[in-house]
Length: 225
Image: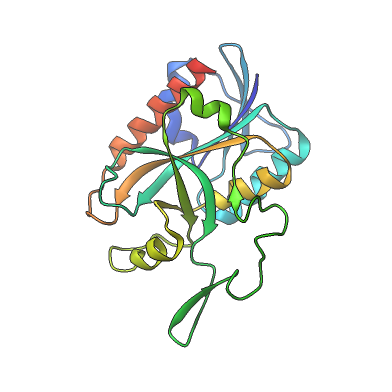
């Protein structure tokens, strides 16, 4: 199986690559892309760095060159709901732009409200940026399916409520759409996992635990594929 794994930093998944004794070979053309062999899989790993703009560019470049049996993104995010513990892994099946727009007369208007985007336009599916290609992954990966929002900056406890209520969102990422949008346009099967680093409702935060859970999830996923 040919796999693409997307992470913000290769350092974040060092326990994963070490576990499989993976020797990463940098791509000559794309310095941000590394290839390796893990068990019977051919694996490309993209280190996007932080930000939706970097993620969008690098994922688009990679997918324009070749397609994969599966593209898997795993990254850190913030939970909106009190019951979501830090370290929880969520399967984002619908992603929305969370703070792209403007305030008009004291009311937040996003790109859809402003008519700059329409939910019927490509690559929207059934009114959203919905992932309908990962059904077989849900059979053996029991992560809760949720709606996420991509934000330009992480919210604090006082300001996340608007996004939670407007979008009925469970969590936020800083770059989810940078992965989802190119995958949908390129008809690339994908799976997006968000590991909760911070819960904005409770104030709980533990980056070390979140990274630990991230690596454990990657190891388990590769073993099951």
